[in-house]
Length: 150
Image (cartoon, rainbow, N blue to C red; front, top):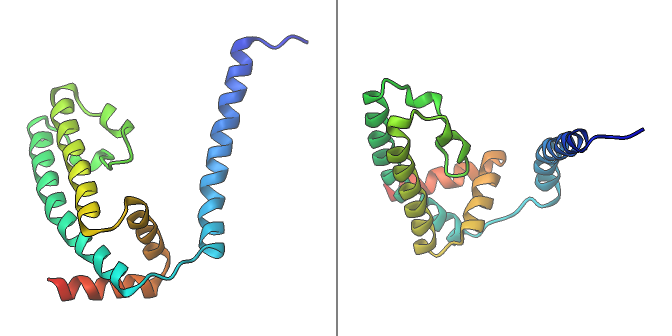
């Protein structure tokens, strides 16, 4: 039996998608169980300071993007505009796509710079972010530190 090149590519894509879905489902739980981390008070304090500073620029970026989207008669909440989701930008109307892309890229670059300026690496920042979503005690420590900073 001969398999067409198109069919084998389709199967490869299905396998990659299946493996990606499986990995995204399993790795967080394995990571949480096997690699739960303890963070120092300094790391938590630095993380909280970065979060506060990032929140200030996030609010401004969101307001600017929301204004552009309103002009284009679009609902900003319908679009995924996270730094890690370039696909979300492709779904934007052409009339605002480049302006929104510029604002998102500027926000993401500024946020990364804030993290690095506080002394954290982006990797550690992301690990703490992931852990705080799953560790109630860590989330409380971070919230307490944010409240102290404000």
